[in-house]
Image (cartoon, rainbow over all chains, first blue to last red; front, side, top):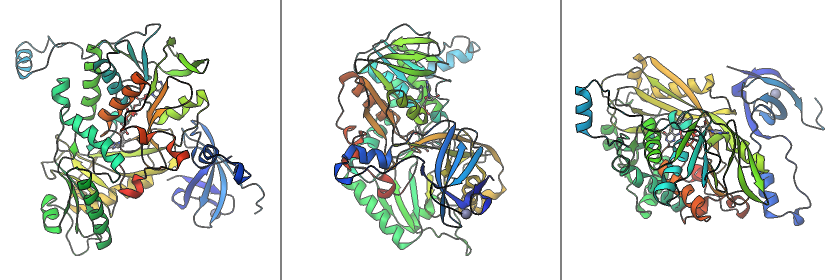
Amino acid sequence: MQHFPCPFCGLRNETEFHFAVEAGHSRPEPAERVSDAEWAAYLYANKSPKGESREVWLHLSCGEYFILSRDTVTRAVLGSVTLPGVTR
Amino acid sequence: MKRYSALSLFREGLRAHRGWQPAWTKARPKPAYDAVVVGGGGHGLATAYYLARIHGINRVAVLEKGWIGGGNTGRNTTVCRSNYFYPESVALYDLALRLYEGLSRELNYNIMLSQRGMLIAAHTPAQMEICNRIANAMQLNNVDGKLMGPEEAAARVPLINTGPDARYKLMGGIWQGRAGTARHDAVAWAYARAASALGVDIIEGCEVAGIDVQNGAVAGVETTFGPIRTERLGLAAAGATPGLTAHVGVDLPIHDYALQAFVSEPVKPCLDTVLLYLGTGTYVSQSDKGELVFGGGLDRVPTHGQRGNLPVQEAVTAGLLEMFPAFGQLRLLRQWAGVVDVVPDSSPLIGPVGPSGLHINCGWGTGGFKAIPAGGWLLSHLMAKGEHHEISRPFDLDRFARGRLIDEAAGSGIAH
Ligand SMILES: Cc1cc2nc3c(=O)[nH]c(=O)nc-3n(C[C@H](O)[C@H](O)[C@H](O)COP(=O)(O)OP(=O)(O)OC[C@H]3O[C@@H](n4cnc5c(N)ncnc54)[C@H](O)[C@@H]3O)c2cc1C
Ligand SMILES: [Zn+2]
């Protein structure tokens, strides 16, 4: 079993967490000027990086989203922070 | 290429097997090819074979960074079936199954296709309704599939847990009689042997590290053996495909996850069908050697490491024991994982991307072994003709911008 650090609750069992999305997707604006292709890229396109990765995860137990940095090859956790603008 | 036959086996038996030849030639790369396929899994090898056999393009190289079949093709649990929901999917997977049905003969190589049938088992009236819907969809798509009742289903899987404490009662489910298993290595080796005999260069230990683009068109690839020129490039690198398209600035709707498989010690024949239990999510078949081959859902942590995590091992194994308490006496022989390329709608990505001359065939996720002949057929068509085959058209990457997803996870509710 691996342990992931929730910025709010500390180290918890990996089964308490859910991967949401790669970090860094920002919603294209304004909506009326966004093409189908841009919108699809926002929704679906990934880097699926091999190695270091910044991801948004959900801690199911406390319901908070946060950013988890990991190595996708070794699965080592590199750190976790709250989402921008969120304070603990 | 020497043909394999019962007679050749007998003859070699008499002379200590000294007359066998290598099944394919270990090639060194030439400076240029008419077509280059990246990835020596089943899909890449089948692509090369059909390029040579159907399209008459014989100056072809398959570039494989490791050894052929060492990716997911050699790591999967070999379930073959076409019990999907949408007509687009059935057309695709049934093309594959029909090609599989003639493959041993066509390639003169026993791929050990065993159409032992597959039962997707349901446990609640609601699940039975969904099964009925899928069975109807299969029949509308002209594929053999039917709803199976509880008695017939129980007779198919005699050791199933019918005890008073069974968490999931077997109510019946969907049956596809043409489904089954095949020998994964044999599929890779058979295509490699047949392609090699048609002049295809199979180059192992050759990693592609870059794509050369000139004037908006593919001009070649950078490899560990130096540059190789080609104007037709096909990517069939499964979970490594996003890293390759990144060279030409294309991001794919793919997440890479580990998918695990497990094999028990061998026992006498006790299960002569493929069984997927909706309740536990565990599926199992028995290999010709007698081992129980089983698996379940994805690891929930995105990864490129070919290793599985413990929570899923526990869930899958617990699922098997819930289904077959008697298997609790068995020991696990092996456990491993492959990196599978999962697309949000659980359907593959087949078609052109980025510069002209570049085509991909990936996103097969947890279920692309059964699709190998079709994947190769369709990618070779794209590479040779520069346009879609009607069966691959719906699977183009453009379906995401067009909102035409083919959501098999929602449609048929099943992985693998
Ligand atoms: C545990 C497990 C169980 C499964 N069970 C089933 C099942 O029961 N039924 C089913 O239908 N499917 C199943 N699958 C899925 C199936 O295995 C895959 O979808 C299928 O094998 C994909 O074939 P492929 O040829 O696309 O990929 P692969 O066989 O993975 O081949 C891709 C190849 O590309 C090579 N490569 C990668 N990057 C590069 C590079 N830069 N340069 C050169 N070469 C490169 C890799 O080394 C690899 O050999 C399972 C998968 C796993 C992991
Ligand atoms: Zn928390």
